[in-house]
Amino acid sequence: MSTTTPVLDEPVAEAAPAPLARRTGRRRRRVRVNLRGLAFAVGLLLVIEVLTATVITSLYVPRPSEVVHALWLELQRGDILSGVGTTMGAYARGLGIAIVAGVLLGAALGASRTAWELFRIVIEFLRPLPSVALIPFSILLLGVGSTTTVAMIVYASLWPILFNTYYGVRGVNEVSVDAARTFGLKRWQVFLRVQIPSAATNIATGVRVSSAIALILVITVEILTRSGGLGYYIVRMQVAIRTEDMYAGIVVVGVLGYAIAMLMGALERRLVFWNADVLEDGNR
Image (cartoon, rainbow, N blue to C red; front, side, top):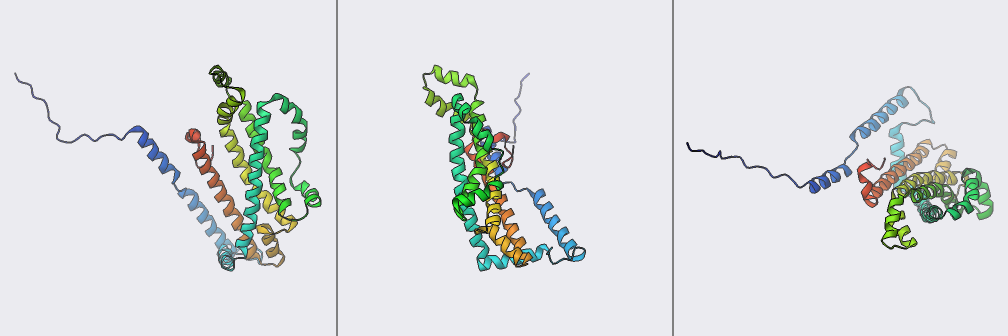
């Protein structure tokens, strides 16, 4: 009896390498658009448009279409863009100083128990103080202007970064530290090569939280001190009873907040890439 080997007419498709498939899937997740969220936002705007056109007919509650039209005119005039530039300039300076100071102080306090015990009373005294309550003191000390705005941003944004860095450094696995010392690394080398990279996820979380706090503070200080920027623009439109322009300024603040959140999430996924599997659109 002769045996015959069956011949497969159809070619067998080669499977894509697993790492390439994972990279492709990850890249697709990064550019994915939240269609459901976008649809809900558009639907909500349509509902508000109908309500403000039929039920809530007030001078102080304009229709979304009127706000969009006012925003378009303001963008053409350039007044609101000037406010955006002033606000984002103070925002970038304040948040940048807070990041540097928060990471350095938090890392130093986390690495040294003596330093933590030395500064703990002062830190625990200052941390609960509301930033808004310190604005009058800051005005008396620094005057009205961008210096006061930046100082308040630094003060409010410092604490999440500092404490996240502190707990990140303190929470490093002791086995990793002991292993590094076994290989002959000095204390400062262990700090830079083991403790800081291990705390990177906590640091990124602190920066992401502080980025939202900084935007809140810059608008609040500009509204209270009337020192320029988007906050002052909103106050001017409110005093002039130009409600459409006032709401247009508020919309710009919201758009900036959303853009900052997306930017911080993207930076976190890129810089803290080993933690990318537990991140979804910048959120844990």
